[in-house]
Structure formats: structure tokens, C-alpha cells
Image (cartoon, rainbow, N blue to C red; front, side, top):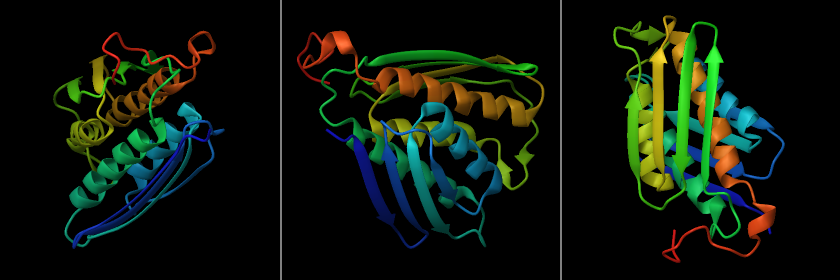
Length: 197
């Protein structure tokens, strides 16, 4: 059974299309108008081995906030849709990724309960191109709220803002990949003692 999510989200501020195939090969086609954000979503698809299409047309004449936020909301909703009933998946995933001087540790539970813990070094450079670095947490908040997952992201150290943000997306991609993959020993089994996720 295919595990594909497709979400279209249109407001007065943005128009977003997201398609994700959890069982893909990392084929990515992303265009949000925010170059660094495109780069991060590319990391998410390629390292998660998700086939990912993201097309966002936003009010960039104001700033990048609405474009980034609404894309993350649609991405979370598409991911949740693609997970389906969650029968037979691993459910939990974690990954630690270094990027030069930076390190990111990400742990995820596809629990059905949205919760985010996020820490990263203070006093980062405020901008990477047109990307506001304070948006990283907001992306994760938006994604978690719609995907309905518990996500812990910890960057214990790092110096370069580009590296600090990028290693978070790479680790997130791998953690989501591991958690959402089918467990061959648990075919037909929902990984919950509650009987619901």
C-alpha cells in the first residue's frame, strides 16, 4: 500500500502544495522562494529517502515568515496523511549528525501527540541569506503540530549558523525515516500498548 500524502493549503498570504512519498528514493522538487529553506527541505527529502515536492507561492514582498510557516504546516499535514494508520512501523527514531563544528541530536516518536523540545546555541547569526534563523524552531513547531508527533531536537554546540541549522534538518530526516519505516517483525501490528497512535 502506498504511503503518500498530498496537501494543498491556500490563504490570503500563501499558496502551498506538498506531496510526500515515505517509501521513495529521495527525489526532491522544492521551490518556496526562500533559497536556504529550499536547501533544508532538500536535505529532508534526500536524507529521509522521501520523494518530496514542495511548491509555495507566498507574500515574500512582506517577508519570509508566512511562506516558511505555511510550508511547514502543509508538510506536517502531508506527513501525517502519508503515515496512514501507522500499523507495522518502527514508531521511534533517533539520529545524531555532525556538520563540521556543529552537532544535532534528534529523537522522534510518531505518537499522535504533538510535543516539541528544541535547543540550539544562542547568539547565532540572525540571517542566512533571506532565512531568519529564529524560524527554525517555528518550522519544527508547525510541523509537529500538524504531523502530531513528539520531537526532541538538541544542538549542544555549533558556531556557524548554516551548519547549526543544516545538521538539524539532516538529523530530523534520518530520525523520521527510521521511525516511519516498516518493521518486518511487526507486520500488521500497531506499535502501541494503548491500541491507538
